[in-house]
Image (tube, rainbow, N blue to C red; front, top):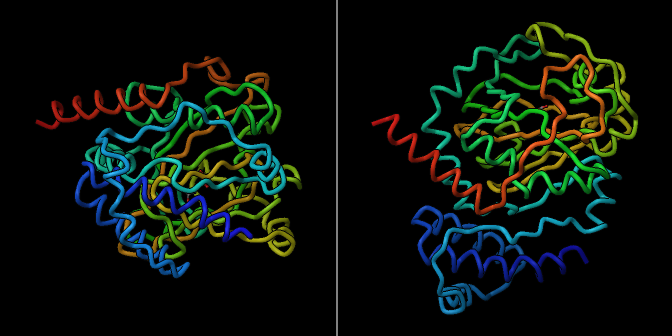
Length: 334
Ligand SMILES: O=C(O)CCC(=O)C(=O)O
């Protein structure tokens, strides 16, 4: 049944993406798309490859891809989120959009990898991240303000949300640093009274088991907040969920490896237990995570400005902000 639905929905998308690729989003997007089509068609044994090339005839347009201005989740998506504690949506952003994001982030590589705080796992092994707790005028904040990411949270948390913080997670190739099992509300608890909070991960590079994709325990958010403490050689601010409880929850909740292609997004509840392993591959695993809370969730011992309303951006405004930032980057790096 699920496969049938996927056939019906995925095939028109492949044709549509093919048309967009061929009408000007660049060679590497075309090549990646051809590989995707090939894998997908083989999976379902559909001998329709020639049909993909009818894309440009059907869609002779050559604009940059933007989302439809309607980011409403279906009731069944919302129900699934409440049941599982997460919701993964494939191809939420196009590959070409994510390639552009990746190119821009890679130009900021030195700045991003030199954030003064490094997270250490229980063995003391580092993994890189860059955290912002204020919105700025760059590509990272533009996405944190993106309606496509913010509006679903209003539905998922059942009320208007506001920004909390956002971060770039950068697992470099062949690095051993992991993230221990934790809930984000394990430590957000210090600053917010209720767990009406969540994060959304936007996949920039392919995330797989070998490069340390996020792993979640399905339904674990329904067990409530677990105590957190420092484990082994974790860095000063790092916290890990109580290992005894994690052991029990590992035995009773399904462990899901969130293998995601670029442009896939994962909405996850702040009480969902999650972790990720080392990157044992030769490819990087970069992702942006943006976190939100309900506006009526009282901040507690928080910095000024937390919990205030903020301005969201439409898909077109995000693309404008991205263009402006890329231009500033070019001037900066000249
Ligand atoms: O990026 C990862 O692998 C871990 C992210 C995470 O655990 C978090 O942001 O809370």
